[in-house]
Length: 122
Image (cartoon, rainbow, N blue to C red; front, side, top):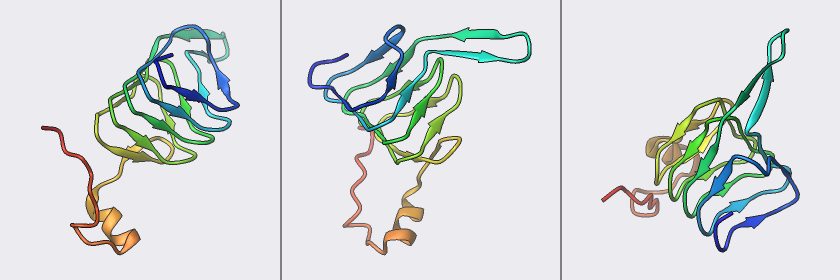
């Protein structure tokens, strides 16, 4: 776990999880680096990588092989499927997780372009 990272009460696989600095993991979030699948019990075991300044939601889930870039915000109840890559400086929501576009944020919140400040990659 990186310096300044906060972990609330949650299910965390202590092995194969790497986090950056200043991350927040909400209540009852799940970081599962292993997953049992199928009737024969195939086990998937992959590292979960989380960048710097990530806000991981309450009741959120990341599964084996998930990679989350820097400055990512996930909304509550979001879940990333196996081997998802979440790009830096974005907002994500849903099951399975998907990017929130600026147009949708404007529609839902009623805010103007100037009021919405999503940091763009330089």
